[in-house]
Image 1 (cartoon, rainbow, N blue to C red):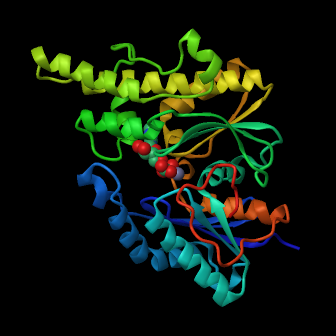
Image 2 (image 1 turned 30 degrees about the vertical axis):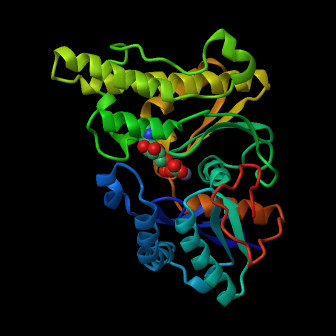
Amino acid sequence: MSDPIVLGIETSCDETGVGIVQGNTLLSDALASSVEQHARFGGVVPEVASRAHVEAMLPTIELALERAKLKITDVDAFAVTSGPGLAGALVVGVAAAKSLALSLDKPIYGVNHLSAHVAVDQLENGPIPQGALALLVSGGHSSILKVDDLTKPIQSLGSTMDDAAGEAFDKVARLLGLPFPGGPWIDKAAKTGNPEAIKFPQGFTNPEDQKDHAYDFSFSGVKTAVLRWIQNHQLTNQDLPVNDIAASFQKAVVEVLVKKTFKAAKDFGIDTVIIGGGVAANSQLRALANSEGEKHNLRIRIPRPGLCTDNGAMVAALGSELISKNVKPSNLEFAVDPSQPIELTII
Ligand code: KG4
Ligand code: ZN
């Protein structure tokens, strides 16, 4: 019998994502983003995001079905992000998924957005081996996770104590006068900048941090250091070396992410590292993880950039994985959980 067709819906932040997956095969992925409506505010405005999800939901579902050459009645199960994320935004996706599941009499899986960022890797790199490590770096989270089985609770080894990595990219971009979201812009500016121009701090890398914070991150220090550097520079000079600052900041963040992840892999005897979340789209993070992985004999798995940032395929991928492991669907009465913990894969 062929694997069930799973349609996944993602609305935790500003992207309305709908993906269709069968087994580990991606059949289609459609995305509508409200990012341009938030840009002038320098961050996502929850009410604006919710309204945009309502408007984009049906056209995005239709586009995903059209691209997969399927009808809605061909779908065997629905998966939807139940959390973590913006409450009002999550409600839109969950309401849509529930209506479809109820009217078509199909099962529904309310799943964790963070686990889905890890699960999506299966679509490109095949089944995740037992005992892998995952570095999850997005706009809201930065964690090192131990993943034994995506259907079991994921264990967090460490996470950020303040800003998330993506948040630091976005805030520093703002200081540099670059558009929101800043990650891709810093990535681009850094390509023509000198990463050695300025030495920015890397949080929790002092010897005394090794006891309690070996796998934890802190990005507020580097952000403040960039601010101070800009303020000092502007006392005597009006021209800001944007590309050098971007490259130096990016180097500080990317190096600490790779260093701590590789230390965790070594300490726990793990040979496979998955990197996911929006910041995993960063070209320098991908390059450094891959080159260091080769040196240290670690298998590095990173999905293509379009599957690192928020999308519907990741939700469908996790739904498909849960079905393949015979996990029971969610009860149709489930509510969204804006602070759904990483340990809770399915609600
Ligand atoms: O996973 P994601 O799409 O949404 C959340 O779940 O938060 O991650 C969004 C974050 C933003 O902070 C964005 O600036 C960052 O990912 N990002 C990047 C890049 N592309 C997206 N950061 C660095 N380099 C990139 N190329
Ligand atoms: Zn995300």
